[in-house]
Amino acid sequence: MDRFIVEWGAARPDIDVHYLATLGRILRLSSHLREAVDDWLRPFGLTWDVFDLIVTLQRAGNSDGLRPTALTDACLLSSGAMTNRIDRVEKLGLAVRRPDPDDKRATRVALTRRGENLAEKAMTEHSAQSRRIADQLSRAEQETLARLLRKLLRSFEVERESGERE
Image 1 (cartoon, rainbow, N blue to C red):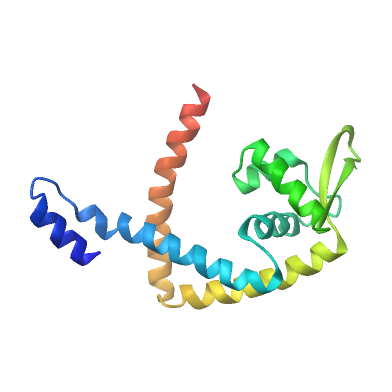
Image 2: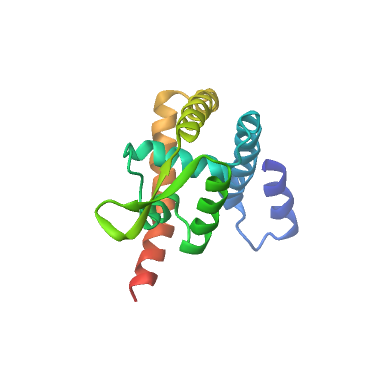
């Protein structure tokens, strides 16, 4: 990134490209993180999409499962994408759709015993590997970075939420 900043500065001195020092690194880091996550989930036979769904169900801690709309919100997906994801996880035998005990017109998605076991093991590995990466920074650095990234992320999410309300 430092080289890109220098090269772009020379090629286009009329443009301030110092944003690359942060945004360029965030994009590169995102790519590296996605690769790393894929690598540590692969031995479990999981992709990020499947992992995200089963650990969301695990995190909810509700043996009755969650309604698809709650999963859509928790996983930040469209309803169509969530339906496809639920279908995949159900075909893998990791989750099942059941009638909602509170509303017979609705369904809930719950982990199977196999899904619970796999979510437990995969989340343990994910947590250990994520901690190993995060520990490249001190606790204070992690807190500062988290605060700054939260600020950037909120700028997008507030903008999206205000656009949805219009």
